[in-house]
Amino acid sequence: MVARYMQRAAAAARSVGLTGVEMRECEESKDRNVATRKVQEAATVLSLLPKGTVILALDERGQNMTSPGFSDLVAKMRDSGTPALAMVVGGPDGLDPGFAAQAHARLAFGAMTWPHQLARIMAAEQIFRAITILSGHPYHRV
Image (cartoon, rainbow, N blue to C red; front, top):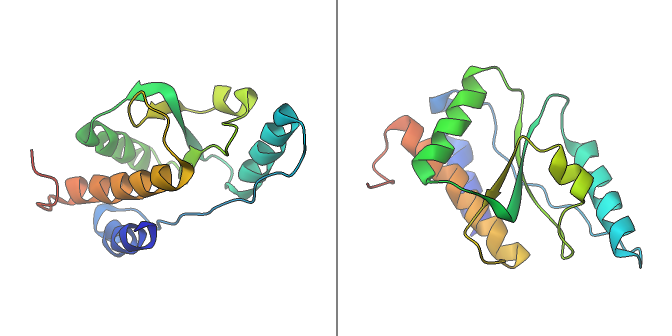
């Protein structure tokens, strides 16, 4: 499902002024210490992001946002010249607090904790939905 939504999003991205859409999965740290694992995973994520990337950390304690609100955020970032926007899903132990603190925003897919794979699917679908909202496509019905 992730691949399907990402392909659809990538195909429609240019029509709304976005130059690319992709999803990357990082390998989990094998360190035995939870805090060290989180720091290592954050460093791996940061190493993959272009300079100036706006980070949206997915966190069950984050802000709940509507799909139109998320598409507005994507449009605002696009229009301000943001080079990249990253939605980051933490590993099994969550995100490093230091990494989460430097995120532009913390977003939630509700108050529940979701398995990593479902969170990836939901993120991919919301990216696709934001693009369709921005393009005026009827995929998102109000």
